[in-house]
Length: 136
Image 1 (cartoon, rainbow, N blue to C red):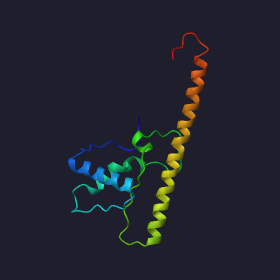
Image 2: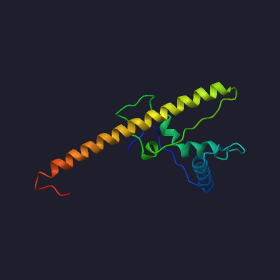
Image 3: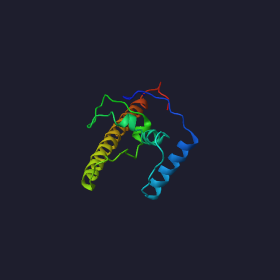
Image 4: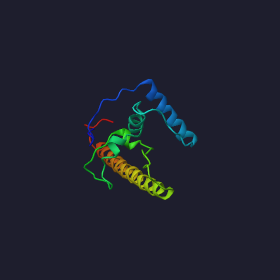
């Protein structure tokens, strides 16, 4: 599969695996997690990797049938949001709602594509049963 984002090398270290486990625990238990530490240790890179944000961020706001995304993007359940230094609860709420809406559109578009593929597969299987050279 091709993507719109350039491929970068990311080494999944022990710390990244712990970060991923932390994020999955937060999602599973519906916690709000805070990741903190000194600058330069990989917090943002880990978050971008976990959310597939380098690929999602480049997608257009509305779906485009010509864009092919990775399975990681199609399975994504998380958005990446860094609150601005100067913010208000209303601004954060508006920003998060915008991101949430984009993820919903992405999920809805991928579901529609999968439904279309299932329909085509069923049709192909139906046509295949009428020919002696087809094997199931």
